[in-house]
Structure formats: C-alpha cells, structure tokens
Image 1 (cartoon, helix red, strand yellow):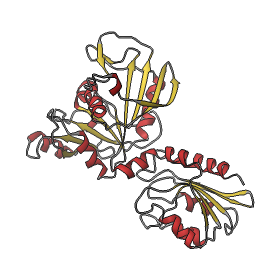
Image 2 (cartoon, helix red, strand yellow):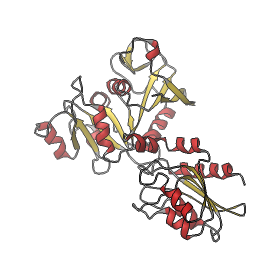
Image 3 (cartoon, one colour):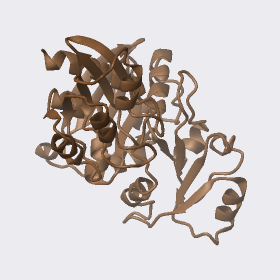
Image 4 (tube, helix red, strand yellow):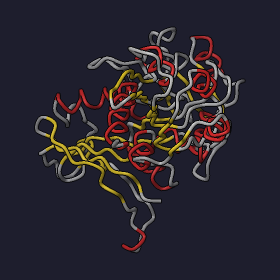
Length: 362
C-alpha cells in the first residue's frame, strides 16, 4: 500500500477549504479499505465538521478495520465540534496515517497518543513538508502567536508602484487584479495605511472571485479617514477596524466609532506611527491568523524593516515609469550582506504581468 499516494489525495481535498477554515487549518481525509477508497472529506468551514467526520459520513461501507489518511493529527479536545479521535476509536478504524502533528497546544501529539492507547496503529510524518506548507499560516500562528503577514504590491519593471504624482491605477493587468482579489479572499484581514485610503479610496472587498470579505484594517495615526470613504461603507457586512494612536476622547475617534467602525488604540513607535508589531499582537488576540498588507510604501517598508512580513507577493508589470514612488523605502541597509533574503516559491504569468511569490527568510 502506497501511503504517499493516498496522502496526496488528502492534500488535494484539504486545499478545497482554502479561504474558509481560518483560524482552523485546512485538513483532508481519505478512508481506504482493502485497497479501495471508501470515504473522503475535508474541513469545509470553521465551526463545521472536521475532515475526519466528513470522510466517515461519506463512507460507502462500514469503516471498521480501515485505514484513514489525514493531513493533520486528529483533534482530541472539544471545541465547536467533538474530538475526532473519539469518533475514530468508536468506529474501530484500524490504522491512521498522519501527514504532520498539530502545533496547537490543545492537540500536539495528544491525539496520536490517545489513538495508540486505544490500539490503533499510527504512522506519522507522511509528506510532512507538503502538509506543513499547505497550512503555513496555521503553523506560523500557533508557533509564534502572531498572524502570518503577506505583503502584496504591483510595480513596474523599474520598481515603481505609482507615478511621481501618485497615480497607481492600474499598473497591473485585469488578470493580476483578479489574482489580488483571490489573495484577499484567502486572508482574515486586509491592511492599508491612511495614505492609500486618501489617494485611492479603495473598497478592500472581494469582488472578482467567490469568497468572504476580510476584515478591513486602516492604519491611521492622525484619524484622517472620514465616513465618506469606501472603507466606511457597508460596515454591517464588511467590518472596518481603524488602528490609531489617538485616544478615545478625540472627537474624530468618537465620530468614527459612532459611525460603526471598530476603533483600536495602539502605542506609537519610534517615529510616532502606529506600532505595527503591537497591532499584530492585538489582532492575534482576536484570532486573526493572517493579514494581507496592500500598501502603501510606508506600511510595506515598516513591515519589512521590522521583520514582520512572512510572504512577499510582487506583481511585475512590463512597464517603465522612471521617476516615481518606490515600493520599498529605506530599510537602513548599508551592507549588501544584510539584504533581506527571499525564497522564491513560484513565478507565474498573469495576463501581461509576472507574479513572484516569495517567502521572507528569517
């Protein structure tokens, strides 16, 4: 029996939950009996059945004596759903093959131990790297206590995100814009600085693809945003959080809160801007496990300078502007050996553009 073959199928199933399971991980499960697949499932949405439950419920015959392939260690605690380990034991599944252990301290090998104690044969770490990569957001969140941060921007071939006068719509192609909306749908929150709001008046919603709208976050130290901007519209369906250093007694603070925005006070950094790390910590406390930063240059630069970015998605348009606004400002790097190093995960073409998807090497 080739365990990797069935685990690859479980991985494909798990990926179907992308954009819907957070803060839970994406998980896929396949049940095999006498060499035949008799059941399969994936975690479809946070709060709903886990992959193991869906696979068992889909089974075409009794699962007793079968082997279950699951991309992540089955849970052994009660949350919004009962423990999957109890169901696996009760259904007399004989063998469980696991892609990787769960970093959640409520699980973390406890599920494996419980199944082994019940007499189930457990094999772990099958396609471990692939299973961890699929849930890089979840593992980062569990292991660091901070949201996984993706920085995304579109630039010309000579590194400009706008003309010298600030015009930026649209540098990228329609195909790249659709890709950007897919990224939004896959993140819990989307974050921009007040400069981007004042210049572009973005809506920051998912429109070109199917998916949920992320929480909109505006970093606005001086509270320049007003109720007329798009980020302050339709707040009942798409909430907006405004991070500022201003106190709750500030008239603008009170006016925005009255209009329906969620206001959060964050301490200042050394430049009297919103402290991004503290903001991320506050977001993590709300179970926000992933944040997409879409600009502008000041926010992008701060995230990179403070080592808060985990992923860098750069859309490169085949255009040259010459003088213009740089995507990344001064990182105070004076020695080439100190340059931020990236690992290129993929390079793809979207419309006329090239998209580089990288991970920031710590």
